[in-house]
Length: 153
Image (cartoon, rainbow, N blue to C red; front, side):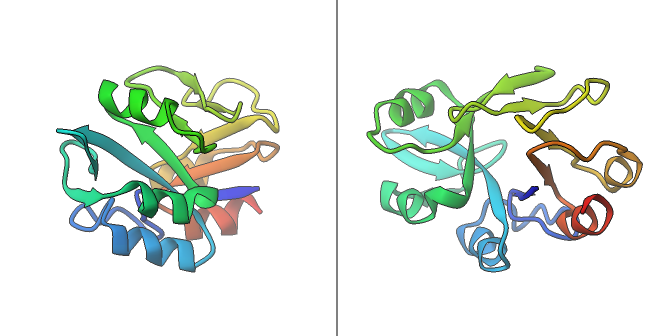
């Protein structure tokens, strides 16, 4: 099972650090994949959930691409990333129960469905982690990665 840190979080939300490049690198160094929020403004790439916060560049993404799951937050970003000749892992959704990632996985918020080895389950809060009773899926994305490892392994 792959463990994906939500915006760099490992042991609960840290809103002031989420999506910060150094925070993401901490989670990567700890051995986890990371879900990031990507935006584009005036042809510049930014990380940030609700707004562009941290200016990055293509090389920053490229150096970490094997372990990043890029949540596309705007039209300009999806156009940009779809034109790259690099196999970034990305997806976009707003309030959908599920979406398909660029590398063929189902990112599913519908916890009533039976998950398969092609599914990524976002268990963002601790209660979801502790109560979720399936284990045969590809990956989990959470703010509580340490709890996910303990409960789901």
